[in-house]
Length: 620
Image 1 (cartoon, rainbow, N blue to C red):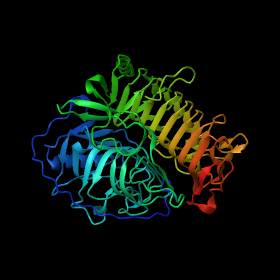
Image 2: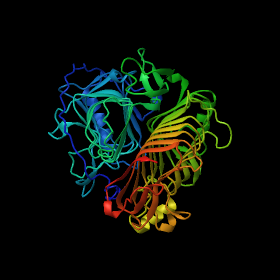
Image 3: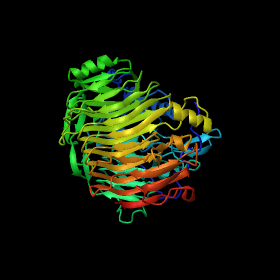
Image 4: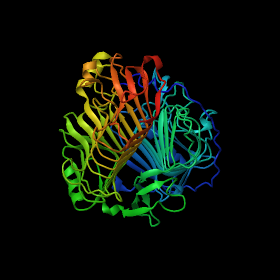
């Protein structure tokens, strides 16, 4: 498998401050070893369930082998979830130190994060991509991993002096941290121990209690509804919404913090847990408005509990017509880890249906299908699912609501998408017109990465000819199109699409953190031209929209195929009192030019200021 080109995103992280913290050693009572408890066979072979009676050495060996298999498997098809039943894992003398690779979920099975305690570490390090794994050490392609619903008592016993300074989570997009209680040391979102550079480009945290946190080289990050002891620094675009202890943003853009005291709309991701009787359940969180802090501080997260017996537990071998039959009968859907070939749409039509993927379950379009269709009905939740384009062009990969006709989602019970990721190209050629199309009103998008792949295993060579081939072959015109009203996005990451990366036509839309890279690979300016305008804005609000709000947005340019290409504006919006952009920026990553930040306003992000953002505090 070819590795990503060494130059990928190398312009992103230039100047950053570091605050190093020392990890304390946890001292918890050892758990006596006993016979291993078998995994629940209903979840299939790609789900491993640990019990606190298992020897630490056995759990460690299992997870070490998993990491070895997945640490370089960026474009592979293996998917796995490692789930921990309630109890303690690891001891002061024998900590459980986990490293997390691609397409891997590490989650607790407690009703509260405090029900599962890991004494040790859960980490992701830089990958070294050249010179036999000794150089070009970055976290820029550390995608697709999940950590959730557990307490981490940091114990670095046995690690060297640098590794012992923090729990390292050096990641980029499609990586979520949710429902965590971390203590006993510091959390670092970059890896400063591996040979440099240590660039990183994430990321997302929600509903978590965090220690002193080193942002380091993370160029953008959203922390939502959490508690943080301290936050070290910012690079380009760090956003906090409803976070107790968040830094003040009065000095923007120095540092470039954006801080909202409360989150206007949130619903935490559903999670699998084991109740007091040993039965598997899924907790579905309630919708909350204008909130801050965690949901689980004094009691179970508010919401409803659904027994696993009400779910159809699907495996990749299950035909779509069987899945649709079970959904039509009123069952919910749990997608176990694996790659599902979808030649006809999975149809979610009933209100309050839960579609929960674990272990990065992936739906791949076959023969131009729309892999997932969600009706515009109240309360549907889709979470933990990745959707891939296939060889034949799909009109859309996930459609929410009908484009023409009535949709019935409600403000009290919005449709919710949590940790839903999209990929066009990468492991194979992919083609779609639009990745995500939202037609329904009252939809919450809570963390998504919508990616037209800038690298992969399609067989193209690097350089001009290879990138030209990619432009013509891996096609995706629009990343996200929002036609519905009252749609909220918390953590919207969209990259490399061939026209507008995001088009927002609905009224009263809100985005809290937007991150975009324009496509790397237009061959000529003629290929990147919108009527009389050079290029397509990274974020477009429709000309007829009267009310729209964006907090913390960035559009980046790296026209590696043709550095002479220009883009007129990073953002395009109608000039109306109800359309407000707060804390926006553009930046040049060493190739190409964005002439203005928004609507002809703002200096050029060009080759004279590589890596130096152009900021606007407000527009208009």
